[in-house]
Length: 201
Picture (cartoon, rainbow, N blue to C red):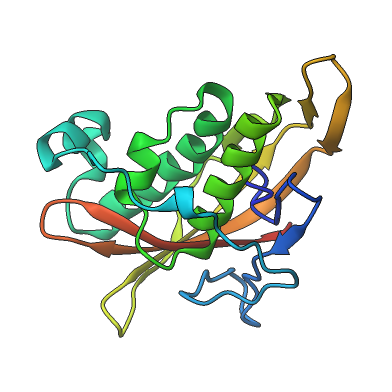
């Protein structure tokens, strides 16, 4: 998904630790696996436990685009793209309720995203840029043998800066073109995110 918003790496900001979520499988498309390889491990803090009042299924469905609700590849593709854009939104507005509700336990990308958001809150950081544009065209991959769905597609991410309360830039990320892989599981009436990976295009 990321430097939370950048998908290639997660900048933890607590100590500048960087996590790389490998999406390379030797094929033409990146595949996010339930256990992506990492170069540095970000340990989630105790505050990363699931929200005590998660969204109900009805509340969740009301926030998800209609074309992302069914159990088929087109819906999986729509949901994966929606989730990727939503992962940037939690940095901008700090509202992580939807993100938490659809994140499966053990999602490395999701845990690193929460760690980044918590670090930003602790250090009163704000973020500018990092806009995610999903490239036009159909996603690839599909239903896997283990029952998960893998969705791969291209995105463009604009340059981004993290700024402290004095206006000083703490860290910045350049603009990037990425191939993203999102692993999903359908849970009765909605999608859950198993993990996210990426590679440069």
